[in-house]
Length: 188
Image (cartoon, rainbow, N blue to C red):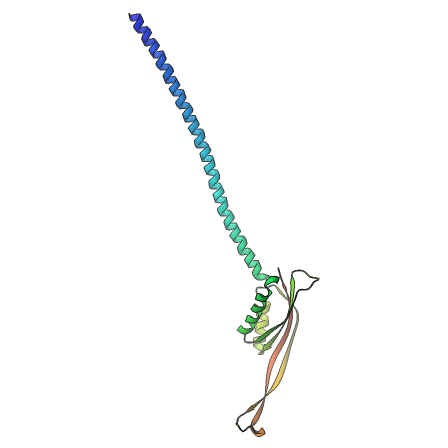
């Protein structure tokens, strides 16, 4: 009987060892698969994080590029928006208390990315010179071709008496300065 009981315990122990070994191998494979899965998820997550960081960097670079493009656009006149440049010139004349008249805007055929502009500026000497200095130092790349400055006098007759006799009329001479300016500006 002892022999049967020992054989039974031996058979049960071997069976229990095989079952435990099978469960251990099964759990080991589950852990390996989970590790592979977690490793794949971690790698994918790292790629997504790097991609997201790269997208943020790309967005900042694109914003910097747009800012640079706008800054360059401020230095160059767009041929399709020449009216904005002409308005800029006329506003400059208004701000400086001079009559600034744009006589002509031309795009020379033999030169690319250049616009030729000619204008007249009329007013007090200091205002005319201030306008020319502002034009030379403006944000646009302006190259002055020609500049003529002349003083012009005009007679103005004033009357002190409403009867308008010749004796009551006073003749005054008003002088003003006229600058004729021709320049080129870089364009897009």
